[in-house]
Amino acid sequence: MTNRLFTQFVFVAILFLSAGVAMAQHDMGGGGTTSGAATGGATSSSRTTTVTRPTPRRTPPARTTPPPRRGVTAEQYTAQADDLFKAKNYDDALEAYQRAVALKPIARAYYQIGWIYNDRDDFDNALPALQQATRLNPNDEYAFNEIGYTYRNLKQFEQALAAYRQAIQVRSDYETPYYQIGWIYNEREQYAQAIEPLRRATSLKENYAEAYGELGYAYYKLNQSQESIAAYRKAIQFKPDYGTAYLGLGDVNYYQTKDYKAALAAYKQGVSYKDDNPTAFYNLAWCANDLSQYADAASAARKAIDLKSDYPEAYAELGYAKRKLNSPAEAISAYQQAINLKPGYGIAYTGLGDTYFDEKQYREAVAPYERSLRISPNNARVRYNLGWVYNNESRYAEAVPVLAEAVRLKPEYVDAHTELGFSQYKLHRLPAAIESLRTAIQLKRDHALAHLYLGFVFIEQKNKQGAQAQYAILKQLDPKKAEELFNAAPPSMRN
Image 1 (cartoon, rainbow, N blue to C red):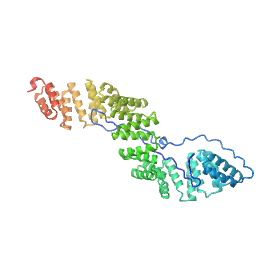
Image 2: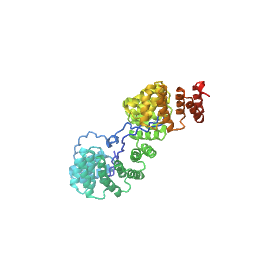
Image 3: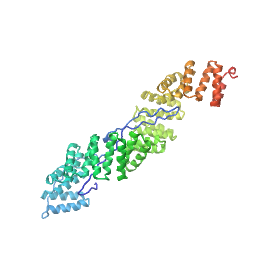
Image 4: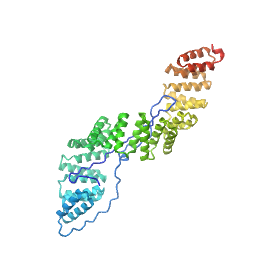
């Protein structure tokens, strides 16, 4: 059972770690410049899907009040119960308190009965005992606070708020009800209303780590990132092993400020204290991958999967890490598992295609790239890679529309213009090829491959002067490509 104070009870509610929409898989494949991360699969951002809250248990039947023993007074039973309670022998303490109230209505005994039932999550039996305690002693702030806790766990939030406010009315400097009121407002997504009672709680108790943590969450949900960071740091200052506060700090930096280095550090600390949150491990993996810490990313993704086996985003993140660690078989397996779990997951298809592309298994890359583009047609980099593979497979007519769309989506994409020019050259669409290749060269004057392909086009046109001009440029930029162009020219064009 929970170790709680006998008289001045302060219950620490479980603070929630927000875990909003998960970030996209890193879209950094080979074959061209990156086009930035696309929006990927998500995990729920709701408070109830990531917090580990006690599952409501079936309420046990109320214990019948044991008959008092002859000659023992209510006060003696209460004193005996108090000793048992202090020894954390709650079962025997409960029986002794019940014997006491069977003889005489004692407010404090009823309070302790309610407290013990609350500690057992037996809220239905706790409530009447606590209500009797407040009837007998209307000035017992602790009993009202305990009633608030009972109602809160019964999800009867209006009654809980009324009880907490009654506790404050009895004693205005009682910090716990303020904290609990703020907690309820956060739970009901009334974040702006949570701020004032939580700040009041922290003003009454300087080292109130849980209240600072809940305040950090409220500010986070209000998109007040700096205030949230300050509150979470205060929580950690007063409670250095406060895992949930570290995870909350990670969330602010991950989802809002995009400071992934800071997020990574916070998540690492957080999961070292609180290791039951799969979203935290996933976010940690994403940050580690983004910062090229692939071994750490793989480890974190594995832990996310251990906690949540049907986590396609975590499998995709594992695939990316394994790809970067030159473990293609493991990367392919992870991406395929992500696809099995989420057949419409475009990022996983992209990663699978990229892995095959990296391994020069170009034919195998075609199907996942094609599927990726059906899901996310505006990914210019994937279009470039697929166009490159089509060209490599001599499927030039199929390459042209794919590459043409890539340059439409990203007009500054030099490699895509160059590859499009090569497709057009192989299809003998020479004017179009010249236009594409000259566009590439305008974007990047020293792009040797574009000069080489343009030289090939001039050879095809029997344009000796044009071919020789490209040869001269290549001798300065890339002598090997210059030699390749020279060897491709007929003897009549070599002098």
